[in-house]
Length: 382
Image 1 (cartoon, rainbow, N blue to C red):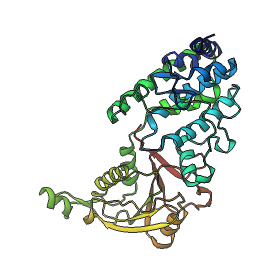
Image 2: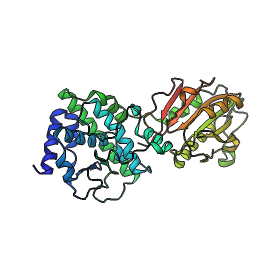
Image 3: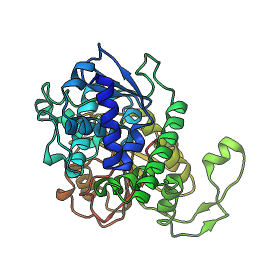
Image 4: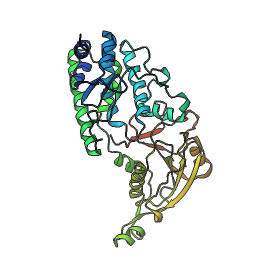
């Protein structure tokens, strides 16, 4: 049997095994690539590239595993979520997520595939960050025999997609996933271990800006004072606007995660949104920059807006020092807003503060050990 015939036969078996995997694999155009590097399989969301010798050596169960592995790269949107991350390390991280899911579905894993139970329920972003913080633990040549993920649309030598193209491709991919879910449900064989994952990926997102505004607004308790005005708005526009009586928020603490995974453009966007909200509420704002230690603290009043965030630190991720700083130095703190990628590794050590806490996270999957007393909003781009 020729290599492409083996791949087609494996695709048919996968369809009979579960409609979900089989439906998604048929969206990919099969392309034999003798010089594929590494010589395994790969997908860019549009094509399935396979090395002929690699495919020829796979047993039937192994072929089903590799094909399902490539499908899950699409389901996890691996080809659309990498951003500026290192491609090889990102592929390792996504492989760890995928292989645990396929193990749960009783696929016959290849002997040298990347799998580790300590990463169960971790997102690819969290695994990636962990490997960045623990470089000695990074895989050394293992796992390449399973399959690779390429940036969307680049497998045939195309240029990387623009942000608008990525957004369009993401919507298209989610539609295909939802259609495959419906087909599998009708057939009665939707894989149980990934059903919750699918719902998370395809779920509609709340308007995070409104949630952020509501969180801050709920802390305001004084009445509007029309005898005074917002001097900053007056100076900029000439328009007289009322202010709220009293020190409405007391002190507001903004803890900024400045570990290596936080991007400056995301930080400045968040600062702009917070600034717009704080124009309405007289308060003192302390910005605490922390990776594994507090690296800098800036203080603002309403007269100093808009907020200007700084990137300092770029180490690991431990937020206990920042929360401890709030406890020790901000006696009148009315609320804490934590800006992070969501992968905080020391929640178990952080005592619950006396004030409410909101975490604005830039990655969709929040660590399962995040305490219940932390309100969360997803401000990721995807």
